Image (tube, rainbow, N blue to C red; front, side, top):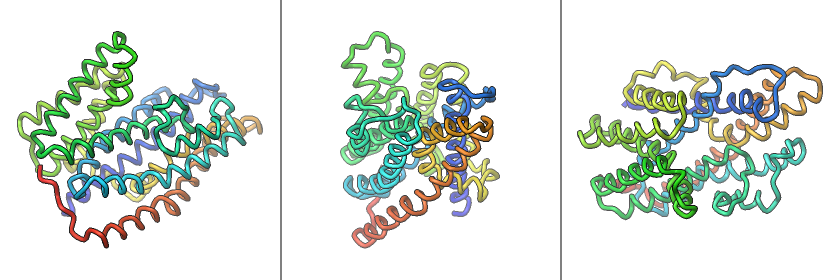
Amino acid sequence: MAEAKNRLQALDALRGIAALGVVLFHYLPYYNELYGHSFNPPQFLEFGRYGVHLFFMLSGFVIFMTLERTDNPAWFGLARAFRLLPALWVGIILTFLAVHALGPEDRSVSLGTALLNFTLLHSYFDHAHVDGAYWSLVIEMTFYVWMALLFYTLKSWQQLRWVLLAWVGISYAAVIQAENLSPALSFISYDLLFVRYAPLFISGILLYRWHKTGSLAVSDIIFLGFSVSHALIAYPAPFNLFVIGCYGVFILAISGYLNFIVNKTTLWLGSLSYSLYLVHQNIGYGIIDHSYAAGLSGEIAVSIAIGISLLLAVVIHYYIEKPALTWFRNKRRKATPVPTIHQA
């Protein structure tokens, strides 16, 4: 049990490291691309753009584990809502106010668009994100809906596997034929089925089953290889190889070979990762802009942005995110003392 716990903690640590990589990417090379820094950021931080892809792998792993422990779709939906929405709503409010106060002007949205962001349906109505990082949350939410429909409708892993395999096959076809898709097919493929990212989630599901049982059937090993290889055509080189490397790191973690990265700092970052992701990008850009305007160096400006983003993440995590989740879990424990486990 202790070994299994350490392996899951290694995933939490990876989440924290990935979140920090995303923040550094946004504040350094990406800010430099958008607005210009007074210095040249390290180019290797460009790989931080693909930290989100590790989040998607983790989501596939965690969501399937959650589904197996949840006896009906209503409880699953409520669990996801209480996990994501309270922190998101606070993040939207803070970011909306901060961007209107500090800028950048090209990142501001109307009040109506901000309110639509509360639903995570805004992308489907061609409204902008309150924070650029929210694009991945729309995909996450869509993935939850699909998985709840599939998991609670289909009767076995064998049936679910065929649907997921078809999804990966569609992802290959849509990426290869991207330029030839009609607007309707493009919307279905890239918005509803998120074909550039779906194999990341599905690989996470397969890795969860491996973690749970200690082995995979030969057919599932082939399926996993098929899903992982999708990265080679979905992303440009050398970033596609980096995503493949993320799979390798993930496998090392659940195999017990990355327990050495588990410490108070990485676990703390892991616990803050969601809240940090919600508030870092546009708020950080405004802070960096005003730091430059005050005559501070770029390095100091970025440091201030990191510090304030971490402080906001701490407040949201400890005073919004955790209390909301604790309240929900207590309510659920009283209502359903013994959850039913779905048989695969």
